[in-house]
Image (tube, rainbow, N blue to C red; front, side, top):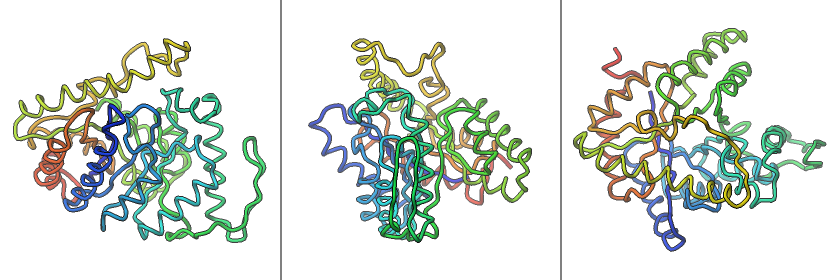
Length: 353
């Protein structure tokens, strides 16, 4: 099992933006030095929940500041972008990183209506816009003579895309699946996926169903193995020397992060009466027991071994949670990469043998 860092930094007030963004570059360089496989970048707008906001622009800075680290999107909110412009930007990034780019694509947030409103897009069109935009992007990368497209949202006549992608025919593309049906849809297409934060039980069930759907759709064992190996699950992670110290640092930071992420959403609901998702039961992503892995290196390794046994290829670890300091985050990453990750060298944890 492989490990990566989801760089998802909160900045609570505009005066902190420059400092947090600079700290993100330093965190990327630390990950590069410690052997983290991928640095994932988010995309969120207007609320300070992701300080650098734009993963395509920020990816260029990260690629320039590192030498080995892969940079991925988790995910680019495709419905907010013009697909040809985004395809061009990704092709440029692929050249800047000489193949170190992973293109995670998704429709956009399922919770924050203000992100669509700020871009003048009807949130109810997000899925359809995403599907059409992804098809356009793939066509742009795969059409050396240019292409035409007539659809619901775009009417295009484009010459050949320049620059051409560094990776032939284009960088690795991953899709987010926030529901079981979304994961099964990708299984039918023989494609890997990124799973949002879920309980261990839900993770086991969804990956088992995904594997079964791959087989039922006629994909061979090699394809099934590849899809499992290239799929990722997401957890928030805090490592300290002791369980008590990790709880002292991690639990308040996690709870503050969830509160901050709710605030703008609730403000819009109070003012406009719009809520994209009605959640009767709090989802796993906000439940401490399911969403946060915290403890000493031994405790965290044991929790990671449970995930390893699901057969998934990698874990997307969010290390910087809410108001957590850059110093605490760096120590957590250092402990994870020097004392947790080595337990999984060779593909499986010793505890899982």
